[in-house]
Amino acid sequence: MSDQLEQEIDDAAAAIVDAFRSNDEERYFSGFAPECSFAFHTDREMLFGRDAWRSAWRELRESGWRVVDCRSLRTHVQPIGRDGGVFLHELETTAEQDGRRETYRERETIVFERRDGRLTAVHEHLSPVPVEADATDGEGAR
Image (cartoon, rainbow, N blue to C red; front, side, top):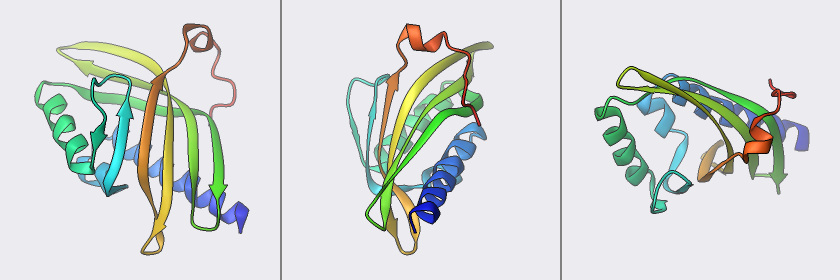
């Protein structure tokens, strides 16, 4: 069961990353529970609830910001019990706003719980990668 759960967690996280990369709002937010909490190092406040993050996302998009590319690096899956777990990875994102592109590396943790037969994110935490770690070659990328 553990190997199957690990794969399910990996697949659920990959779907969220792919939807983010594609700027697909509906598919992206469908991966999060309505009460999901979000802690992003880029925001002053924690966001409580999917709708709070969706509102902030829409403000970003309205300002002209968009994701150009996003990929997972150095992934780790930690099942918890039989119905949930933690997905941890470093990710590299390229975003564009006002014709300027920026690429940055971050660490992200997504906590999943099984609901109605599918894994749903109930918490997401994003933090910067220390400068020393950011200089690595991306070994372990999938």
